[in-house]
Image (cartoon, rainbow, N blue to C red; front, side, top):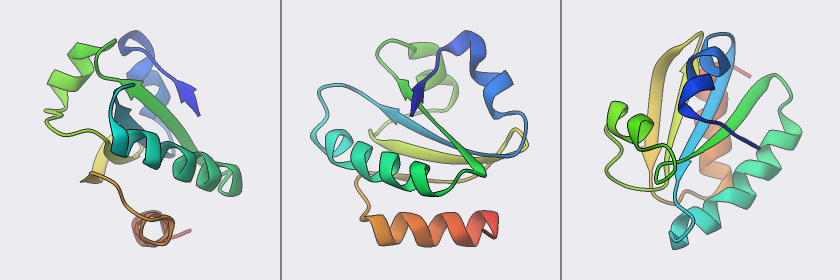
Length: 103
């Protein structure tokens, strides 16, 4: 998963289906969530997966009102359509992606 910065965020999410993982390097649940998202990303090429370190990119954290990490947001053509916070097992993430993006 590509780590993105504030300056490129809008251009990365503006088209298609996008998943963004807002995380910090010290967060235990973030470390558990990351490999699940990496695995899912490798099996769903029609969805773009990105990650944002909210300590390195505090403006994005503030803009999206990130209070808990990890927070994972799903975007469709630049619009946030759903989100979840905290750790979720792989099956729950897959179910949410399939329901949200009809894939």
